[in-house]
Structure formats: C-alpha cells, structure tokens
Image 1 (tube, rainbow, N blue to C red):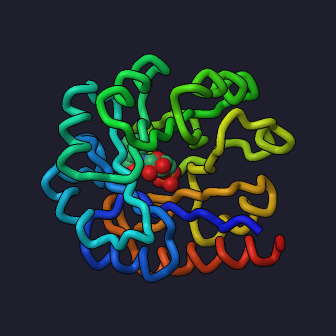
Image 2 (image 1 turned 90 degrees about the vertical axis):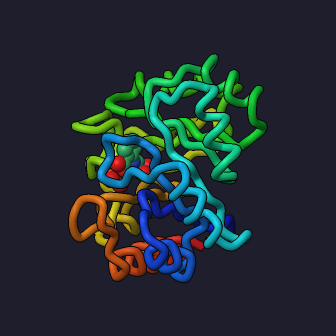
Length: 216
Ligand SMILES: O=C(O)c1ccccc1N[C@@H]1O[C@H](COP(=O)(O)O)[C@@H](O)[C@H]1O
C-alpha cells in the first residue's frame, strides 16, 4: 500500500513545525506571500526549515514570484519542493527549473471538469499537481473545498494532491472518496487566521493515516 502523504501548510512557529513532524506529516509548508496571514520572510522560513528532519520534506509556497527572486529564495531556504500557487504558466515553471533543479508542484484552482482537464498542460513542467478550490479572497488558504466528485475516475496527468477546505473532520472522507495520495491542509488547522492549533494538526494526521490504513 502506498504511503499516505500529508502536507501541513502555513506553519509559522517552531512548536507547530515540531508538532506536524511528530504527528506524521510527510511534508511541511512555509508560505512566502505577503498578503497571507501565514506569510514568513525568507530569513524566517530558512530558520524554520532548519528544524525539519531529513525524513520530512519542506515545501516553500510562493505566488507569482519572478524567477530570479524565486531562485534566490530557494538558495536561502533550501526547500525540497517549490509549490507555485498563482497564475504561473508552464513556461514560467520551466524557467524556474532551469535556474534551480528542484521538485515543483503546481496548484490549480478547480471549478469544473474543464479546469481539471486543463491542468494537464503542466505535464512536462511540474512534478505534482495540487488541486485546490478556485481562488477566493486569497489565491489559496481560504478553507474552500472543491467539488470532489470531479476527481472520481479522472485520469491524472501527474502525481497529484488534494487541498482546499480540509480539516480533521473531513479528511478521512476526502481520502475514501477521491483516493487522494496526498492531502494538504492549512486554514482548517487553525484557531484563528495564521495560528495553527496543535490539537487539530494531530487530529488531521491521525484521521488521514487511519483512512489510508482502512483502505488497505
Ligand atoms: O495559506 C495561505 O495563506 C495561502 C496563500 C496563498 C496561496 C495559497 C495559500 N495556501 C494554500 O492553499 C491550499 C488550501 O488551503 P486551505 O486548507 O483551504 O486553507 C493549501 O495548499 C495551502 O497551503
């Protein structure tokens, strides 16, 4: 049975990074986007990154950031994965890849079947697609779920993950219903915008791992 991948995103403190690692997250996400309540400076992201053991991957999330500053951020933070959560094109991804050979995930807002099919345009430029609800007030991190029914039976062009409105109470159903190999949550694990709740992080990881074990 493949491992259930779990990404806890928008972590901003040492204790919540440690809690995510201890709870079984396979990926921890650090957001560098000034409009986000989860924004970290590159220097702070680099400091938090140092706490994460090699067994857990660090994902740096940016939104429409130009390739040159992106390359500089990658150099400083040394993440394992770059998650692009804006309107970046396949050409943009290719340019970033030419500057820094790193795993690149493209987040795509899914409002209908056409949007899901169009995500295949990243087939040669991304390593993974992350399906999220179509943008709300922010490009992501809005706690909005996409219509999971769209994913059932879909032939994915790349490895993929499910984001958008996930939390401890719905992640098991999301895994059962869609078979998502990776689940990603941020605002659903907070007590207020930007403040992660350690109890919710633990409950999310436990529910995701139990759902995957049940499917075995
Ligand atoms: O978390 C943010 O503030 C954010 C800002 C800009 C783009 C993406 C952002 N978060 C990512 O959005 C998805 C869904 O989040 P949620 O669970 O619905 O809150 C996830 O990948 C977040 O990391």
